[in-house]
Image (tube, rainbow, N blue to C red):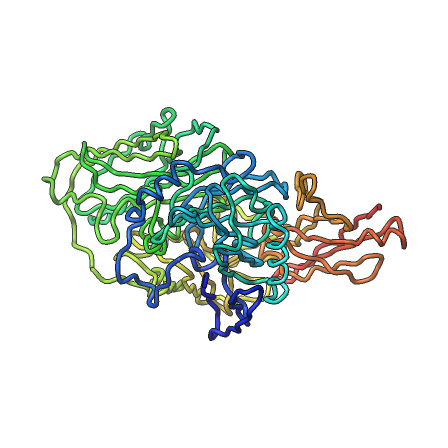
Length: 603
């Protein structure tokens, strides 16, 4: 039946028979797509969320599948740079496909990489957007294309079906089709690429087998040569002897790294390592690694490959990434170099005073490798840690309290609060933000959580313009946390402060931005579209922009992917007036109002 819809309330569906298909539509908002809770419409159902039988995607690689993979075609009519890689950390899920740039052009043809048929089509306002799944006629391999413009590049009746289903479902559906209805040979155009769903224009491409997904970069016939080894940024160390380190790494040469000059590792007991890293591909974007491992001589202590992954593995992404240090914007991927219930290395197996030599290795899909050697002097193991996972933590002065989600907190460590006596140059506040509290640096030791932790700050009454903010050292900026009354919801680590927002939001003309630019034959006519950049250094844009066209209220649309306001004006207005005056002002969550922004629309 395709994917089951996951809804916030009870499940409600109605059954419709159309074009010989049995189709289910949700009656209320469904969570779908690339940024939703589910990995894919093809993911096998699990009643409890915990698989009863471990399934390995490699068990699906029979001769028929391998033959398809060895002859896989490129999924676009031209090869473009890779802008997003497989298994990247995306806050609440992993990115189980590969992204290719379209340079903001809509209408480029998507090409079938195998001979087969259309297995399903779908559409959503977020996530995958308009999408299509192809099934090989000779194996269990499936290919998914997402963020499409339409199906006009393939067959008109399939596009008419999509339009009919969109009207009947309110724009949200995923349906399975009969295999005989839409056969498609390898190398044929199946759709046109666009920017539906989440994100700007690009192709999102996935490879599915019954038990999991495969990394497309391992099998696609890529011509562009990736010459950039991974960049190693930070090493995090948590030891049973109480040692907690965050070490910036020094780059000696391409692919060669070392600890900061003079830094010695004296550790005892079980030790867990995490590595902050990324990989530059042909697009020069900062992407996920292909492989990471830790070795003692020729012995592998830990290895993680991103060549493929079962659905069960992908759901447990907290075992792979540090959830509270990893982010997509800016791209920072912090990898756990240890199994879920064990250390990276157990130094209790070595005598105190001995030297243990380790090597950390990271590589990309093209085989470029980066290496970090580690020399550890073995110390006393220290006191054995508790096996209980704590979820409530309080600052030494009792003012800050953090409660992490009970079901998605991992590790037996703790959160630590370090009070910062004064603002440093790094933590400098932008103009318009005023501090109303002390500043606390929040760190973790062998503890992470997935989702939102509740943060309460005693002794301060938060007014309308006040909020709890976090300083992200990777992004080098302060940002407001989501508020729930006098509490805030926390997903990351960083410096915390209560700030008062007196900064007015701004509206400007964007630079170097294109939207819905179409290749020849895919043009859309009849509208004059204007984009305006919305920025705010404090609490953030609150929605509900006030737009006036010739002094009268006029609708506008917020583009959350670009943080821009879109105003669309019918070109037929030119028969009324050749020049139109457009005025806009916006408000932030603290109630600060921008100046009026004025633009002249000339037809």
